[in-house]
Image 1 (cartoon, rainbow, N blue to C red):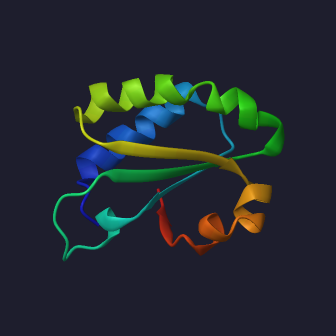
Image 2: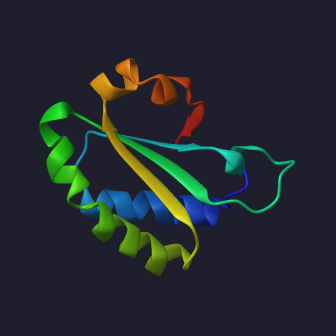
Length: 99
C-alpha cells in the first residue's frame, strides 16, 4: 500500500477523534497497488444505518482534520451503511483494506 505507516496512524487518529465507534474504515483504489504512482487516497467509512446521516454531516470536519494531519492532497471519502454495501453494485465490488 502506498500510504506510509505514519500517515495511516494519523488517518486513524482523525477518525477516532471525530467519530465514536463502531465503524469500519477501509482504503481502496489505486493506493493499494504498489506498482502505480500518484493517485488520491480513497477511503470508505461504513457506519450503522441509524448513524449514517449524522456521520455524513461530519464529512467536511473529517476531511479538514485529514488535511491538517497529513497535508493537503486529494482524498475521497465515501460514507455508507451496511445496507448500501450489500445492495450497491459498485460498493459491493470494492476490494479494500481495513485500517
